[in-house]
Length: 256
Image 1 (cartoon, rainbow, N blue to C red):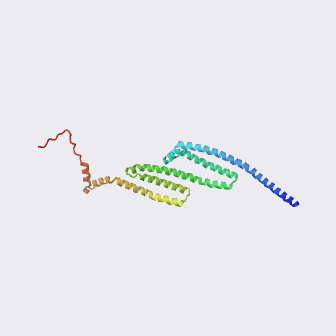
Image 2: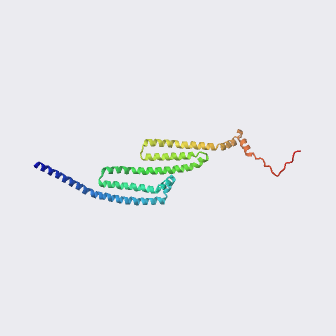
Image 3: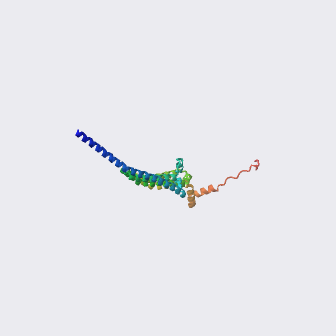
């Protein structure tokens, strides 16, 4: 009986000690939880305020022209937003993640804190990659619009499309390289495009000019070298006058 009583008392002592430690942990955790929730509330308010301030500032300086030049503004409007609003929303979430990371440090959650630290260190690269995509899309649309009239006049409208797609591909590869996504592959493809794209455009422009400028070249060569026979041919074609029209009131006398 004495043995059972000793065992029961040991069990009760261990249970009371565990409950005491649990109460101590809860008592230490509750203040940290309150502070973490307060940090999140203040961070959410600050992030919203900075988002509103940023959107108004970008609207005043005309930053929306970048998304319009990139050709994505109609798509964003169909989704119920705009380029400036999208930038403001991205900044809002970035700031909110920073405050979440501070709150997790207060709570002492080491695993979540380490994960958020890695995410925060990676987020600036995401922002830079998005800016690279916007700028590449704007340059692609501008280049395609500049080349399109010349290409269409030569019957080679596909050249502007090729230039636009090539610049977009280079922009996507540059964005992936910024994110350190398969850097060896993206750098190799990007260098290849940058090496052969100008040459391809030059060849296409040369062909287009050559096809459209054959007659001009013949006339120029005929003036330089009259013995080639081209000059007389063009002069004959230029000096040929149409026959005079027959007056309907003029009567032709009958032959005797």
